[in-house]
Length: 400
Image (cartoon, rainbow, N blue to C red; front, side, top):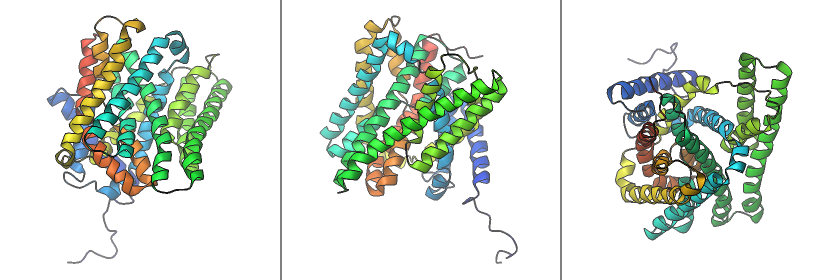
């Protein structure tokens, strides 16, 4: 019996609201099961639901639907990075220069260890360099959301969040600069190879600068009313995402820088504390479901050896960077090892950086994804446990 002509064909494709609602419900259910049954961070449940629904599982979320839902991933990551940027106090980094040095040294060590390890295992230099640049990043969503879930406060928590922000900045800059090499490999003109990365970096910062001053001016105009300022900040964030997409600059770098500018330009304290995370929670759930859907267990079979090399080299580099300078930062004894564990996760930002490369050169991006995907799968599932253990062990968790 044929489908009646007067009835619409049921499909998720193009039905953005239905897709968003289903992802949100499925992810939330998986997160609660992970929390109550496995005693695991809810993020693990979100990711597992995505894996089950994705191409490696039931294939409910095929590649076309993942593309349709990528805007939700971008919004979720943007909100996380904005919140993370608002925690990055440049005055603190100026006074505690050893923390800044630790972030830069740890990022450089992670890049170097991953690059040389992958090159040693036969990965071409350009792929090894891009994968290493992506490996510098620590998942801001995992660290921030696990810390919020545990209601964690203290030295390890704050240092982990600040180092995560620094990791993200370095990873964005490195991948953008290395894009010139990718353009050269694909025989693009020198104008594109040189100017596109400069345009992307400079455009993101200019947009963030303008957005930061706009947010502060509006906050000063409406006064210290938390509800109104929440709407203003949310509007500026969404507007920044739209303008960044329109002009082809990095959405994620724009929002991280926007958060930093809003925090550090507010010398008159016009902004009152508002919690965008409460609104962003719906996007955070979908962010991890879609991230999980992009990953397949089969990638562990095809890239298992490289994934192990990547994960071990990355952890070694970050540990060398953190442990090497901890003595000078004034951190309490025993916190360095916990901080290394807290920097373990790699998730949405890594996938977004790969996605950016795929947008420019699909074939190159697909090969890069084959190197990185298995490692992201491991660290996206193991990372939340590592952060949870570190914050609890540090005695900073205030969970009920």
